[in-house]
Length: 95
View 1 (cartoon, rainbow, N blue to C red):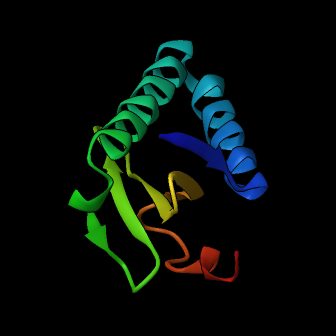
View 2: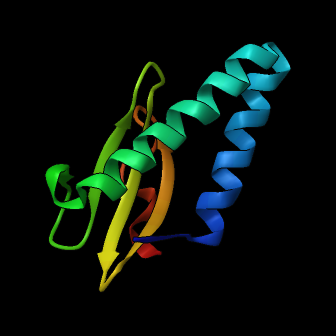
């Protein structure tokens, strides 16, 4: 299954990784690996995760306070946001 990122989700991922990198290169690497694991889990079984609404689902990023918010469109997974779980809930809904 193909995975595409909304441009804003790409920016969020980079900015969050940079934030961790400023504190620890290990934390930044672990964050990116954890996001990759979340995306692999979504690809493996996209219907398994929490439905936020009729179009969006989310998967938690293990050990980090982030959610990968996505939509399944035909045979693609579109990552809508890499969202901090405790800040500005639902800010990505207009994407």
